[in-house]
Length: 488
Ligand SMILES: *[C@@H]1O[C@H](CO)[C@@H](O)[C@H](O)[C@H]1NC(C)=O
Ligand SMILES: *[C@@H]1O[C@H](CO)[C@@H](O)[C@H](O)[C@H]1NC(C)=O
Ligand SMILES: *[C@@H]1O[C@H](CO)[C@@H](O)[C@H](O)[C@H]1NC(C)=O
Ligand SMILES: *[C@@H]1O[C@H](CO)[C@@H](O)[C@H](O)[C@H]1NC(C)=O
Ligand SMILES: *[C@@H]1O[C@H](CO)[C@@H](O)[C@H](O)[C@H]1NC(C)=O
Image 1 (cartoon, rainbow, N blue to C red):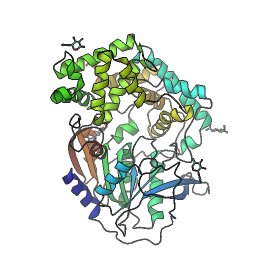
Image 2 (cartoon, rainbow, N blue to C red):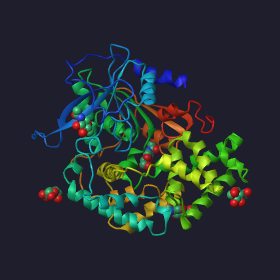
Image 3 (cartoon, helix red, strand yellow):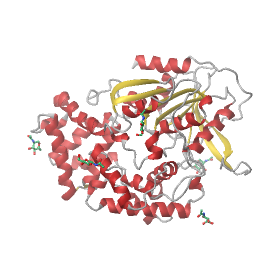
Image 4 (cartoon, protein in one colour):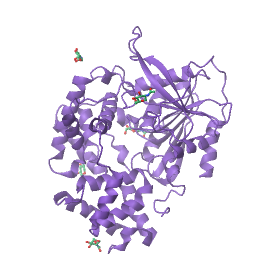
């Protein structure tokens, strides 16, 4: 942990601003606490940018709302921009979280201002995507976004619901939907860099989809890259050019198996070992069997139906975050031993079912689809053209290969053309070399993708971290020992 900290600090701290380019155009002041909840001091600003970069004569503007965690050590050595993934996650409601902000400040030597914003199309932006006009349409779309192996008829239904989404977005967002591609967000970041009035150079740290945004920005503006970390890397070639993000799931089943290996190693501390199963393989097989059981015989709990979707969603959630592993073992043990009140309580805590704002809840998968499908170039005329991609996904990962068919089906049928899309390659020579980071057991942004992108970024370095879960940063926040069951 300490050595990573030093390495990353050096990566940023070595640099001093070359020459400032005049005064900042940004005025920073207090934030709206509803939109920017924060545990640490933050300030906010707005920047007007072109709404449509392909219309240079238009004076239509888009307001970008910025939030900054100011450097505790003054004077600041400059600003670092962040993107926390998705695509489609807000940035402003994330960066002020105490543990996150403190870790980021520590990792950057407390000498840089940390800045983020809600990218185009995200719920917090001024052009949020919500394609459905009625709650009924929004909710029925939302409810069908389950793992496709949940039943034999699911694939066809997801294809049809994706048709509905593509149609609804085309009907209600044919303009805004064309203005939210990653290429436009890259240009927004350049506007921010210029408005900061620093050295005119980009300092950036992206996670997961944020690495695709970073790679795209670097490819479009290589001379502007002063410092960049791409952490938990997504394969941008597939993101733009393939029917699905196949490589993304390369290590998912390996990480899933590691849950059970870790459990057996933890012994009594892992509740799953209380049953008859002694080896990791036996434990894992029992969970696969459980999925098949609840698929055909869902169990009605007090407020939940324990079905394939609910069990698998929890298993997949654990791939993001190994700090969930002990809780996962507890709930799985409770299911196997039929302690259903306990199961219900744990599910309730993880997924509240009361006070749901249907439009808000249903927005996230729409936003992911609208941004990813703007960027992605592959369309399929019929379900049959798309079917081989599904088989390939199933072959790559049993645990998550069926997890985002709703997204891939939407892109296959997307109707809105973006005003600009990055169509170039990723053979990039940046002004300063980029640092890539990959974890050995990352089920969602695998090391192989970090190697892939790093290999065509001239002079870049690849830091490999032995650990479970998505990206170095999020892993360091959870468990400095990188061991799922060690924190027991
Ligand atoms: C703060 O944000 C909320 C939610 O967007 C909005 O309703 C409210 O008017 C804002 N408050 C101020 C003072 O701007
Ligand atoms: C987008 O929607 C507007 C308003 O419904 C319509 O006038 C326009 O023709 C549509 N554009 C396309 C490309 O369909
Ligand atoms: C593992 O545990 C399950 C559930 O208790 C049981 O049905 C199964 O027979 C066990 N498998 C072995 C190999 O002991
Ligand atoms: C999936 O795996 C099966 C069995 O290994 C193989 O026959 C099939 O060609 C694979 N399909 C795809 C699309 O990769
Ligand atoms: C990177 O991934 C793409 C898409 O899978 C592939 O076509 C390309 O050959 C890979 N490049 C390297 C250097 O591995």
